Image (cartoon, one colour):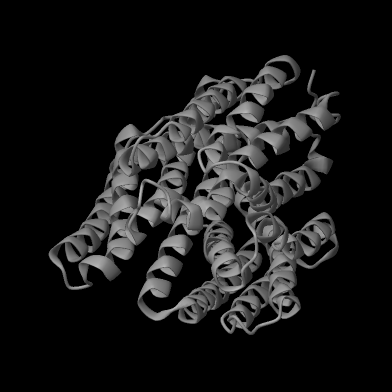
Amino acid sequence: MTGPDTGHPARTRITALMAASVIVAVSLVAAVNLAIPVLLASELHPSPAQLTWIVDAYVIVFACLLIPAGAAGDRYGRKGVLLAGLAVFAAGCLAAALAPGTGTLIAARALSGAGAALIMPSSLALTVGAHPAALRGRAVATWTAATGIAGVIGNLGGGLIMEYLPWRALFAVPALPALALAALVAVVVPRVPRHPAALGLTGTALLTAASVALLAGIIEGPEAGWASVPVLGASGAAIVLFAVFVAHQLRARTPLLDPRLFASARLRAGTLGIAVTFFGLFALFFVNARYLQEVKGFSPLLTGAAILPVAVPMITLTRMAGRFRPRAAVAAGFAGNAAGLALLSFADAAMPYPLYAAGLVVMGAAMGLAVPVLSHEIMAALPRERAGLGSGLNSATRELGSAVGVAVMSTAMTAYGMGAGFRTVAAVVLAGGLLTGWWLRTGARGSA
């Protein structure tokens, strides 16, 4: 049994299974980037916009369903929701592997994203619930480290697959560990008490529509024209739909995400900080594979291995998260993230790989410093019985930031080149970091 002071006796195994589930779900976000050069030359012949949708369909559905998925875990049981997520994820992967055309592939990626959304909040809530109060900070740091490491594993695994197998294997292979993890979770993980929670289907539909419209305005701009009716219409629809979403949530008896929660400066800081940090990281992942393969001539396997300099400082500093002052760690994290992106903006055919790797090291260290603190701020700003909502919000902001980062990088790179893309992303990260730091200071004064 799980006790308030001792935690669950199998908490180490539970944590390992939850971390593995997170890695399977998140690694697919990064792994698909290794297939971009092959997909461009494949029988599907996707346009640049379609290629971005192949990457982002997974991520945007992932992001928009995370909060209701967290509520579903609270309401129906986190173990059951996690098992359902692993099954849906595997089904989407297999459908993508068999896709006869670009539209089907995008739809299958969206289905996998729905499964990933069910996995993430339940995995964090189960991790936190298995540990006593004194160890929960470390447990959150472990889970957070898994989300960061997943990007590296996705690059390595994707490179290995693309080196020796056709692109369809990139989507088929992840289904196998997902099904194996489902079997282990069914045996090892205990059921936990349920809590009343509203799924907020209307709010979910509004949030999803608004987010898709936002991405459509960003992604389609270079091809359709920024002043074209489709792009202006999508951008205007995004603004209207986000406004309607906020108004609906303020009136709803049981809102999906009550905007009044963001009166907490800690919650604002945590959500914005996570979104902006992953905005920068996944913008890097999107362009990294194309740069190393098309410009530097690396093989897919070597390209996957070349992202490793992100991993070591990320893992090391995440494990040391409790030793740093939170505000100082976040400030250093954002400064390092922006500096790493700025350095990478000078990457070209003449840049030596060791100099490129230095930018990756700086970004990995920045992630290791900032992300554990920001994730903890989100969870600490909400009561324990809303752990599902907190974990869903934590994951949603990360994936939404990732999706927008990919879209912005793709758009800027298509219009102005890779260097301009990196500089644009760096500017957004720096601006977001300044606002996050301000809210952290405000939250610290309010809790004093």
